[in-house]
Image 1: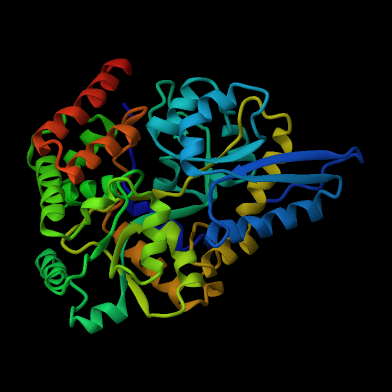
Image 2: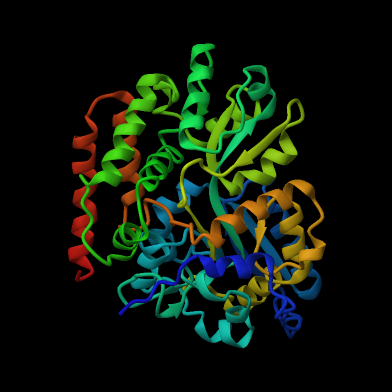
Length: 434
């Protein structure tokens, strides 16, 4: 039986932040003087906490490996999401890359034999000690590509979750208080609409529209439903109270003007830039934006809060470092992962607006970063990380994008959209033998 550990174990992992370990056990410099190149891909924007930390990790890696040059290429999230299977099955594969965690992504690639089994390295280098309990859920996959058990095929070095970013100046201007209940939240949204302000910055062509629908469903969900949806531990009724409420309420939010009707074609970058430019009072999105928001916004005060009225929110350990099976420099890839797990890099990630997994708590001195980590710890202490809606089935991200676009456009009813998203989910259950 597959055993999925609750996210509560993450709380101990993230801001105990590992008193039991001293960070990655870095390997000695590569022997020999022959020039070598480590080909690395990731899709974090340069202003994000992860990109800042990993840029420093590259410098540290090259200093300890004087005969090695890191060839870094920044890719787009959508680009890697859509082409990974094809690229990793070719000679163009990088030596190491960031990839999305979950059954539909890393799980699928592991099942296809495209990722290196990292179990031996995880034990040898102590990654299994730095990533206890729930943090290992998304790192391990069984023979069917289902997360939570089996071999290590990836290594996360940060945590993440979806929250509500808000523009304090616009909240003050319209006399909207930070809500503590769902009713207070929607009352605030109504206040903005009455003032002619569309409150929520949104993107339908990518995330976060599907994550907002999922978050709304989670306000009506309990752990057994989550285990059924994400872990296949029971039947999911796509017309049950959880998803029906999520789809109906999302469509209603569009009708009420909380979400713009022209947002169906917008991408995540459009959403984020609009919020950072002060055009919307609210953005419901992930902690991966936090560092960029902190470094970009200069003209107004901002903050964040957990989604009101919910004990569950989208979130998990962060995306994974994976080593393609076709990597020509696996030993170097392992060394680089080790450096990203070191105290120095983890502390930098934490002070740059990220959620580290192996930092020194005393070293996190940035006030905004502390607020972020406190929210993550509050969520994980309640076992509240609910993963993401696109994880259960291969290609499900695109299915959900199409569904929420139809809700935004009003071209289909919520019942019709739920029928559309049910079929690929149920087809996947048959494919994996459930």
